[in-house]
Length: 172
Image (cartoon, rainbow, N blue to C red; front, side, top):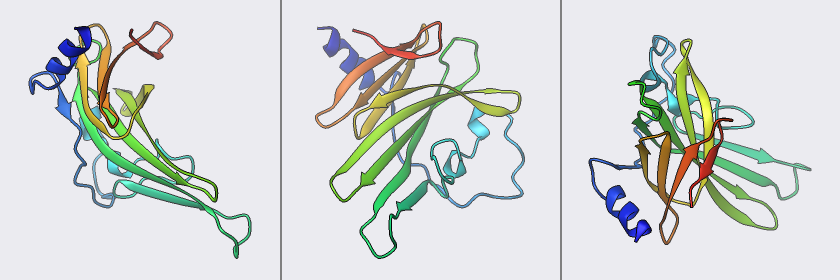
């Protein structure tokens, strides 16, 4: 019954935000610095890749042992950004949905992560991350520091709360 209630809440537009790909373009070098989390250029961020940065919402890294041999590829893609008030302070936080696909000589796989950011001192600050199924369909900020994620195929709904140490912990 509890899972059914969460699905009903997530399917209600007033409580859930569907994850949709943003309209990304190359970074604007003349853009003013962000004044809030809503002003951050997530499409061209360096927060989600271990080498380089997203450009227009995408990044790709090729790992070669030898140039004439097969290689590994890691592709990172911005799937969407959802805004909401995580902690009830009246300021928005951002749930940034990132999808990473990895191709190696032995396997292929895709994982999604929801990165929750606040905004302090003129810059985005990572509050924590939530591992999620692929694709992430909906994200909802709730009362008491909760984030609910609907993801996977078939879709499952899981709710996370931010603990005192700052980690997001899945609720039973």
